[in-house]
Amino acid sequence: MKVRLIEGRCQGHQMCAIAAPEIFGSDEIGNATVLIAGDIPADLEAKARRAEGNCPERAIEIVG
Amino acid sequence: MKQDTEYDIFDQNFIWNPFPAFDSVRESECPIAHSDKWGGSWMPTRYEDIVAIAQEHDVFTSREIIVVPPPPGQLEGPYGGVKAPPITSDPPDHHWHRRAILPVFSPQSVATYEQDMRDFCNGLIDGFIDKGRADAAADYAQRIPVNVIARMLGVPVEMSDTFTEWVRGALEVGLTNPELRRANRLKIIEFFIGQVNERKENPRENDLITDLLALQVDGQPAPLEYVIGVCNLMLVAGIDTTWSAIGSSLWHLAGHPDHRRQLRDNPDLWSTAIEEFLRAYAPVTMARIVDRDTEFQGCPMKAGDRVLMTFPAANRDPRQFDRPDEVILDRQNNRHVAFGAGIHRCAGSNLARLELKVALQTWMERIPDFSLVDPGSVTWAGGQVRGPRQCLVSF
Ligand code: HEM
Ligand code: SF4
Image (tube, rainbow over all chains, first blue to last red; front, side):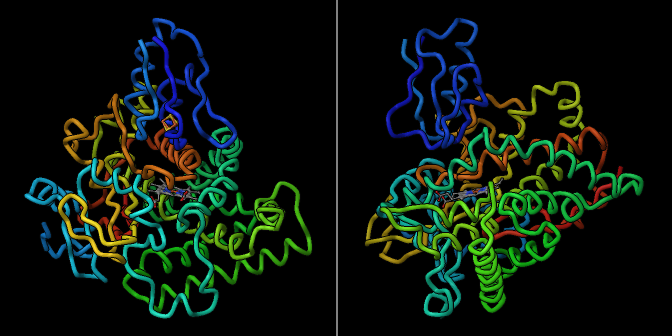
């Protein structure tokens, strides 16, 4: 499983970083950054799904 | 279809409990109600519609964002051009109006306020803990955000009560009293003009107003109206809102010993619990002005019509949230829109969340058990911002 931000959608709610701080961070204006570029470790997959399910802008895509 | 329900956003029953009214509109033939009261407005109630309106900012503009029209003559009167950027801005200017203030509100920046916030909350509790009772709204919730914002803006914290009075005059009591609203808006603007002039004489280090004055836009200093407008917005948007969220959460906890126990036994619940309080008791309703005649979900909206951004109704839509009227502290999927959605998403949300976390955790550590003295005596404000104003608890 990989996570990706859909270009232009993130508005910096930071719900992703609250749900999965290991996977999502914040840039200097508070928009999301993905901290794990490659495969998400199996024990973090549930958190990745929670981040996706908490983003009000539907800016997170889970691939694979 | 146009359905006139003649809802009244300032009706006492609606303020006290708007959710049955939202539900009946949401489940009716037309989930967007219309009322001629208070200057007239449309009231969408479904999550999907409210998010769609927030995204379509070229049709649904932010040229006015208060739930009632401005007092007559305001635009032509003194400082008529001072608005509240970025909340009252539309693209393309909205982009720089917002971009300029975002770094102040990043998670990293707001974290520097945490310890002072905690100390301040503890100090408030020291003041009443021995009495065995307190007003959770007026003695606690109300005092916290104004203190934070005053420090952020570098204005005297001793003036907190005055700021609170101005903000209530401009945004709460003033919405049904245009004269009061006009007067308090002017007080806020004149105060910040004084602050700006003072910074021009004596620039400060690490100071938001000094930095805003130094901001360059297309090689020119940012217009003064922008600087004053941003200060105006921070005071108005940062105080009433957060205080209402803290107050509603304490009101909820006062009536739910089971939830207090769960939070005590399992502190990991706090992060989802805070989002859940924000969802269930979203304090803020905004407005949009329709730019051109348009049909939205079958509703014939005319240029100039006002549309309420009923985020509290969106957050209770069963199409989006399972068991929406229940507060579920560990709710897993919570795309709530208490902070709005789209380009105007609350710029202060990281700060607001931190304040909510610190205020609630500190209270619960010091006062783990408390209950409402008389549920019927709790008073609520509503309209633009909904939350308890008097909420007496004993412990
Ligand atoms: C729990 C507390 C808060 C709630 C529920 C809240 C809610 C909102 C909402 C719903 C919006 C969207 C407005 C729209 O769509 O027209 C907004 C915008 C905004 N809020 Fe907050 N807010 C809170 C606290 C704060 C704080 C503490 C600040 C900081 C001073 C702040 C600053 C702003 C700003 C600057 C905007 C405008 C963003 C833009 O237009 O780009 N808010 N807020
Ligand atoms: S929750 Fe969505 S919008 Fe918010 S920061 Fe994360 S990706 Fe961006």
